[in-house]
Image (cartoon, rainbow, N blue to C red):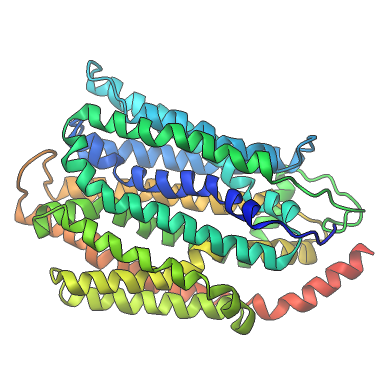
Amino acid sequence: MSEKKITMFQKVVWNLPSLTSNGLWGIMAGYLTYYLTQSVLLSSASVGGILMASKIFDGFTDLIAGYIIEKTNSKWGKGRPYSLFASVAWVFIILIFAVPSFFSTTAKLTYVFVCYTLINSVALTFFNCSEQVYMLRAMPNEKDKSSTLAIGGAIVTYGSTILAIAMPIIITTLCAKKQGWTVLALAMGIPSIILAALRFVFVKEIPFTNETNDTAKKTKVSVLDMIKHIIGNKYVLICLGLVFFYYFNSNLGTIVTGYYFTYNVGNLTLLSIISATALITPIFLLFIPKMLEKWGKTKVLKMGLLCNLIACIVRALAPLNLVLYAITSLVCSFGTLPMVYFIGLLLMDCMDYGEWKMKYRVESAYSAVSSAGQKISAGVASGVAGLIMGATGFVSGADTQSTLAMAGIKGLTIYAPIIVGVILFVLISVYKLDDKMDQIKKEIGQNRE
């Protein structure tokens, strides 16, 4: 493959589907439980149950999508066609925020389950599973990959943070009535459908030359081969753990923080001020590519996750001190940014390690693992939040909550991140692939000749 570099415009356009699907939908998805319990008036336990069921089911579809992508050889490329699914997702996102009022409770739950499953199990599954496959072919230059991911981090962080700042105010004004949520979804959805399609239009795949980035002799890969590739690669399993627990904590926080500021703090609009601190964090992304070159991916991620853990512990010392809450939230954002936006680089290393170990190459299965980790974690987070809030006596739509219900909300918001922070730090500490990559790539190159 030639080392042709891509333009700044292409780097920006590349990240627009991630902004709409992972950024904007990520924020909206976090408020989905709030919408369904406060506006549609479904119980938190039933909402948590159906979202968790959908997400767990969704995790199994990633392998199917990965297999289909692995077999794709279209005139547009291997991963490129599936980037359009980011636009398709927004059609169903609009629908899920338009639950018909005349439906029975069972019909409403079924409607939500179907829409949520189509968003995640179909549309975003194919989009996310094609990400690394598409990038490998669109950006053969390693520095292009790092700089594009850094730019993407800034775009997604700023876009999602602006929405996160606005959401508490929007909820108390536009979304005071159920129809307001539908208006909001339409206002966001129509531009998102257009923006998400621009990557497909402007960023083309560069065909491999003489299979230089694949095994020298093309091997037919079955689903069983893909499973063996994943199970036999301990490093991709560590990456799966990192992805799962980070996104579990992120989704859990998005779900319960609105409740925490509504009932425990007593003022939901203050959450906008806390969210505004995240506007500073993308500046840090400008320095990460240089840090990766100097210290390596693992060390940078490890330092960041240690900062995140310390900040979570400090926050728990005075959880109602909003100045401390804002500062520790900022540190947590700094600490997790390297992992969030550069986990794809670790997965690409895992692809090379898998080829070196198994003697044949698989790509889309690794993207599928990352996608499955994200989506299953979101479902589990919804389920855990719903079940714990239900068990502690949370009452949907009530002006006040019992002491036990508020304790449940506090535990999910303040103490759960500490547990997850410990797990993340342990996982990155046992990831030792960085030091082996130079030799692995050298041997792979020799085997392909």
